Image 1 (spheres, helix red, strand yellow):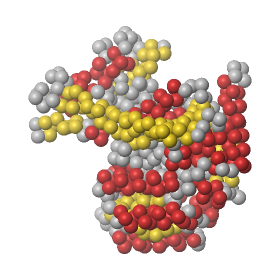
Image 2: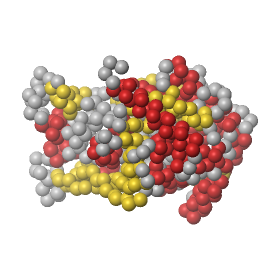
Image 3: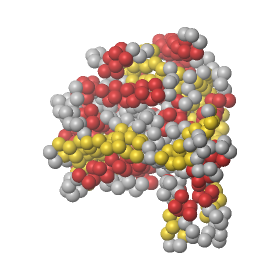
Image 4: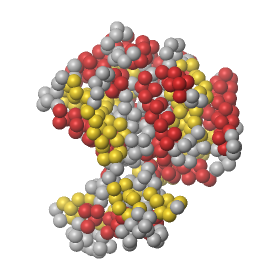
Length: 286
Length: 285
């Protein structure tokens, strides 16, 4: 079973929820798709790490063969090629690696080279397989890294995979939830939290994913996110009350379910609830 | 004219809370929300104003004409984005399509055309001589970097030369962040005193360095972990990055935001601290 944890807004507690949910399971994989700012590994401190470098293809022009016809420059939809001073110049950062320039070059002057944009680290932390995608700074898109990470998940389809998604609702988030059986939306009790919850709510509906909400950092008083869930008849999976001790433990990158019985119970029952929801969704006629 | 951008790497450290306070303190006439994936600044700064909206066209999307398609599979085998799916004939997954045009170029029967597609909405809030530019990316769309550039352009057109512009950034270090960094004069990084916050701060500092943008660091909710706050301050000292103060955790900040106010609209500890940070920032600028 694949569970994706997302939120729209950053800092609502995606990593907190996904790390503890994975640690509360008997055996599971934690997959960190927030490749721009991956943090789960700071909590798990995995051992026996293997590293796989992730590369994309970039065009390489053979100037001996290039006649300067500029067909590649005209074709490139991303303006990654320019004809400057009698030479084709490649702007690596904006290239999408589509391979179009190779295709249109009549002289076969364009080939491809690999460019490393980041890495995937795989390790073990007690009962948890920790898979982390890390984008190098200065690189624009982590999607090739996410695609690689999600292949790990397909290798272990029988197992439990928990996906920590990046913030937002753009293509990178969509890629992360594509293969999810269930989505957990983490929301905080502010009007910002509510606005971004609405966005991911739209996103999971667009992809017809079953989902529920975890209300995090709940304070006394108004909770706009909770009101929205009640009005829209959205499943509230659990409410986590703002707790200073928890905040400190979390900021020191400690895994609370491995240290505190009450939180262990909270996350164990959250996992059980999600299991139930998924069974309900996949039972024909339910 | 100076442009200030607020970034954090990690999400939820308080970028928008800081930006909205700065706009009030500076009485800024030009500001923008570059977090097009999850914009929030308009919830505070756009109240009671209806924005001028324009459609944003991202990359075109491939469309396959079933009548012309002979099912040769050439498009599918050349697509690097797995955007061609075969269900009832050959179709394009619009979310996966990046608009490169390879399929249209390779199709021997002219069955594939590239068609314009709306990828979001640009919004411009005008009030007297103030211009606030923001946007909302369409669900699941890519090219958010390009939309960020459009948001900045829309603000720049309306801006007076002498205006001080304040830009709210997005979390992360990728495409939209890089687009927001280009051309700004200064970056303020709002850090959070946690293991995650520090790791993310270091990555955004590296990114700003690559873009050669001068910067300063401030810590929000510094008292939630004093050891980590000291660590951040020490790191800045070593790296010779100006450190311009701290803001405490304040439940009243949540109240202010939820009632549609900035934290300097009410009298609270976080509001007073942000004001001090702002004054130090102006001195550096």
